[in-house]
Length: 379
Image (cartoon, helix red, strand yellow):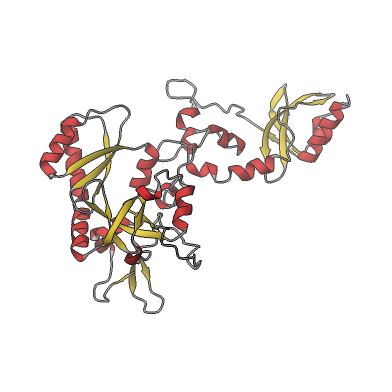
């Protein structure tokens, strides 16, 4: 943590101008002094080292490993000599393809190997890049100088791309710690020939340029925003590993197939649809098969929807699908058992606890041109 002077309190303007906030730092208040502190461990890339108090047996042959984070969701694993004696939160100069980069140590010790296995990091330990040293004052100054020009560089690059007529959207830029290279993140629907763009950027900024294409989910994570729930986007605040979301997840949770409600700001299905999916799957194991029709003397009833929390299944007659009735799952199982024995109860109403009238039985949504909406394109 870095303590701030009382006569220099942090406000919105200072937060906007301080480049360290672009690298996952945030403000917190010291409970003992009441002063604002700059905390490095409150970003979404921060990891809790639950093996911190575990003392492993010292081994000369075992390399020292560290996990280092950079901007946004970029992390990497490095090795370093034991005499360096790093601590979590240290700013370090690490090996890059050409030159060096500046990052913040998030994990050290044996837990780093577990992280490498969990993330399926395939690079052998002996071939990992090196941590050169703790960042010197001149390293930090150059690093902060590089961060401070990222926004202006991004805006200028967007203007150049617009003048060249390129159909691409530049989302973010990340400078290397030694200010000799920049990574530009962009999204595009198809292939983009940006050779002329790279040439003009290299001439104007005097740096090496790398263009890296990302998806719309990664774009939302970098840009941030407010979701329909009123909170900050999960992908921008804490989600690092994106999992695929399919339309079957929405169907299991009995959600209306309305693309305007199911899609997030990225235009894809919301990541939060996966949060309660497993709970619904476990709860539905106790429900009878919804494809089984219930046979009565008054007619045949088909399944309409479930109420997972109340343990209720809704049915309606095939000849009158507007009137639906709530049947407890125990009663549904009882009716199915009677049907298997060749017996038919009198009518569905005898088992119903609640009755509703549906004015719209269609679950199909149409585009402006009248075609049916295909929800799979939002996956």
